[in-house]
Length: 212
Image (cartoon, rainbow, N blue to C red):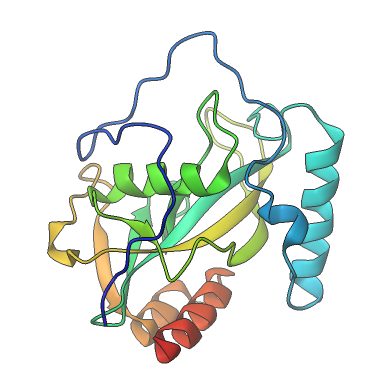
């Protein structure tokens, strides 16, 4: 089972492992959720359908749906896989105290969720060969509650999720000492995450891997 390069051209140069890309001052998001995948996405189940409805309303009602100033704003994330060994990569998120997928907020000037997920995944894992796999399709949408912190009030993430793959699983480099990474089988990952809605991504990844 091999990882095949999907034709999807990165918009920006990938930073060195563990390094966050610097964004020029004065840039702002461009409003719409780029690449058109949100409008064509088909939800599975009542919960995902309700979350998708909220996301479409958000995308249509504000000029910058990625703005962290909004109580509900878009984020993008990815479940990184090594298809040959059928393993998935999880990252420890200190803020949530959970093992989760990689991902995060769009930087100023970004509006394409797949590109945001790719950038975040490369920064958080150090993997430079990540590609959408088996294609660039949106795989799951979920509205996630984020509790208040010392720097941010309580809010919600409208998270758009993808599958990415690497052919070099041993090349992972954690972003920092507080954010370790773990390669796990699908069953091990299910046990680690418990009732978190990431379980839906794991179920879908299991089905995709079985067909690969």
